[in-house]
Length: 124
Image (cartoon, rainbow, N blue to C red; front, side):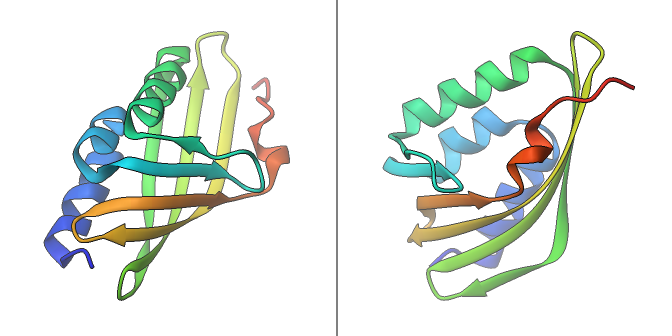
């Protein structure tokens, strides 16, 4: 079960847009990450690589945790709002729930739930 301090440090890192660093510091080596019902990515290195690739395509990102964060033992649910401005000038605004299962102080399993229509970039 994560401590309150661990959760706050994780959230602060994501809100500072250090997504890859959050994966490096807070995900278990064997962790899985899944988008809705998609095939899970397996392994911390895969998560870090994916986050770096996404961030490299963005001109800017705003990451916001919408509180409260729900905690029940090893299970945590965080509501996130992300606003991406892509290098081509398009934007993506996403709201999602991240369902996490922690093993001690590291995330072992995470599934994101969101409307996939939000992933389609819009022209401003």
